[in-house]
Amino acid sequence: MKAAPGSRVAALLLATGLAAAALSQPQSATAQPLYRSVDGQGRVTFSDRPPSSAARPVDATPANDIDTGAGALPFELRQVVQRYPVTLYAQRDCAPCDEGRAMLRARGIPFQERTVTTNAEVDALQRLSGQTGLPLLVIGSQQLRGYTDAEWSQYLNAAGYPSRNSLPAGYTPPAARPLIAPAPAAAVPQPPQSPAAAPPPSGPTPANPAGIRF
Image 1 (cartoon, helix red, strand yellow):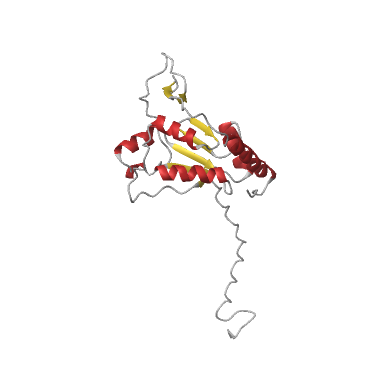
Image 2: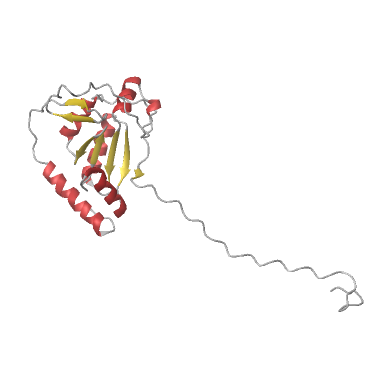
């Protein structure tokens, strides 16, 4: 794995590699069931424990402000995307990120990708998730740190995403964008223009009685 410029980005890559190694350990052969619940503030969470009686039914539809091309999706898939939009936070030269991205595309999951490259974006990722390991997958408000096929599949199933690719043939996924949008380039100040020289006066003058012009 090649380190990106900057000491903090290099530390991020190291943390990603360590997280991938830890997550590559064998998982339990029997997957536990997951439950969805929505708290009083509308936050959606997944858990292997049944939701409490105080949990609200899962019928909330939080606004989806991520461009997933939902208008071109089948109705059932569009409903899931609007409730539980998927965002992948990734980085170049990151094998687990590549594996996670390939898994989402093969399964036909509409998702928005945010790239983490600069030190400022590493700081933003830290504020977002409390850590700097990549990849980070967000389903609704649920965060999955690191990539394992079984865990990602389990949570996508719980959110209601189809197990097989149901995207239309002409679907175009949105392009990956930086986690922090680049600032617009400042306008380059132009040097002041010198005033144009006044044309010489026409006709006779005290300095040119004959009014001769050259």
